[in-house]
Length: 403
Image 1 (cartoon, rainbow, N blue to C red):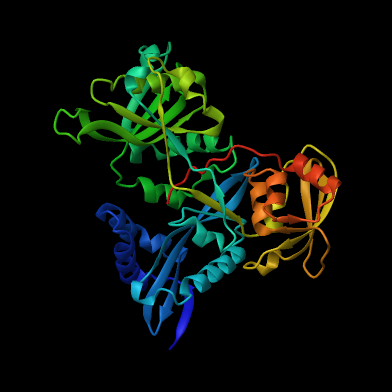
Image 2: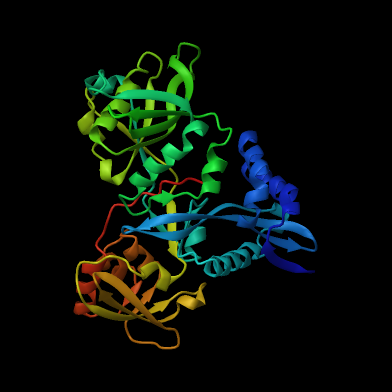
């Protein structure tokens, strides 16, 4: 039996396609999009071959993720599948090790994924992060914004026509919070080319674009055409530079109140007070996407230049069972309010932190006390804990990319 792991070739498309279709029963449109862009994205797929047959696959999408105000190269792990007759053989574990090494070689600092089961990926050092949340609203609740702001206009186009404008506003928004993701040009093209979504742009009186919202429509009214037919607006991305632009887009949502009953608006950490902008409700419903999981792939690259407000120095031993380049003595110093990591891979010390604990602190997902309670931080002194608290306070996290 011959087993090997490698990056995909263009000729692997049909076997990857068949495996993804079997594993996930993806809609035909999604799979056809994958076929259409495979000549560009095929190198993002890593595969396991047994005796010439493709038996396991995953995709690692190159993106940029906001880590405490600094965008770091991120690998979005997706489309993980193993043929049923080849499961329980450890092939995916070895493919994941292969993927970690490829990420390191390609200077990827962190990784993010949406697990089918979080316990499975915790074995690889990933930790749970807060899911992206959505609030379900009847557009009538935007009645306060029934008039456009003075001088503002709206333009509705197909999403493909306004990619550049949408990208600028999306990047403005994701720069506001940890977890926000910037896309590459290839990723933008893959997600918007020939995709049947609408895009509305909000212009100010100087004809400058201050807001953008893409969305899908489904159904009409409140069960007028059947018990399951409810007018809905979903898959919404809403990005604004000003309060006036937000007002204009909420006006646009209100204009659908005779057609749409349910609007699923994304909740971003820096704009999580949507209840203050709506009227006519007693309670609202919050929905959420799948659990999102994160992991540091390259400790030194991740920590380099992260902004901190307090001077100090800390030395700690990092333990990472899957990425051995992260193992060793890590000294963190501060220079011009930025972390300067110095790594000594062959040295050890009493104070230790696991890759899970360091990931949770850097992403702001857990407090230092929680990390210590989970036994991810050991033998830390009072001074160590105080400094970690100052450098890595808990924060609000939101991953804006789905795959």
